[in-house]
Image (tube, rainbow, N blue to C red; front, side, top):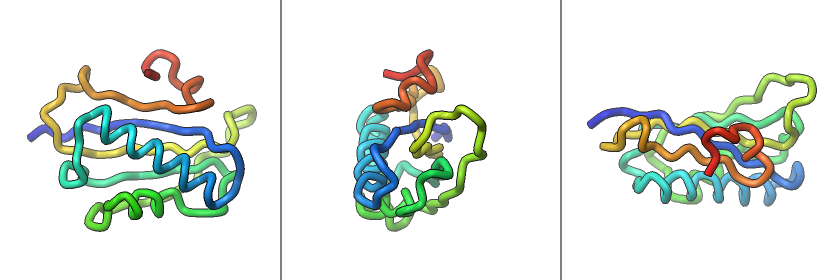
Length: 120
């Protein structure tokens, strides 16, 4: 089975635990749904958050969705001047029969502005 990387991002409303968990849950769920995935298809997920988000680890949302056996990691984005604030990003590595062209990358809420070329 081929391995693919899926990208995604979501802008959350505030640096609050519930906002981070809600946004990340929405992002992970959309990536899984749009790509027809189940947790057994997921190899690993790298989450990043902009430096203005520190109230919770985004990976906790994935754990609550059933990603107990999936390696997860969180990191901080580099602080680029003028970058979009309050953004959680992910790169999910999966086993899938989808071609690179068929993979659905997911950019939600204000984060859709990050990749207008591929945001659905």
